[in-house]
Image (cartoon, rainbow, N blue to C red):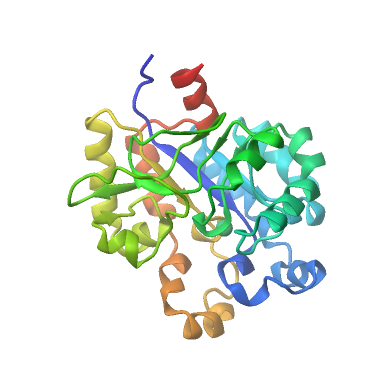
Length: 278
Ligand SMILES: [Zn+2]
């Protein structure tokens, strides 16, 4: 069965410090202090923004240690809880990935998290057997043209959307991340919030066109792009000076989100996969 086209809206739910690599190896308690309640305070306004529209939230597990009520709020509102990682950092080493999966096993089971989104959408082929072993059904951890569905063992890989500008690629091996190879290969990664920050109207139009063509775009946003943290982006100046490419991620995209929700149907990834493959 071909499910009706819809926007597959995903939210990589992470503390604002996850945007920079500068905080990755600090103690969790230091990151908690820096977050200062933000990721918990943001959830109600975000759920309000979504209204009746459903989305997939890929959570950083560390947030559940800091704010135990967070996942309950999200799942009670009818959204999908998925897994972003336990502690946000580059996860491309299989031993590190496995440790991260073990550290999150309890809460993933409790909240029925069966979808995986690799940090920075950067992963390796070896992740899929590990996801299978740890009870996942799907992953969304590559970039690829909208409508690409990949079978990796028993795991479905449903990539974040790109628009191919010069012919469709035929190989989809991890990593397929936001890098020069992807962009110079002729793909516009419009599913990334970096692109919706820089080219808001263009991204909106692409989403509209893809839906009209019967495809279901996969896009992601972060909480700090919907509910602006206090003192933002001033508290992030140091990070932006060293990595100016982070700037588009600091822009507020709540108007973009509102416009999407006013115009297009959404569903969770899990519901879409159920309709399409089961
Ligand atoms: Zn992330």
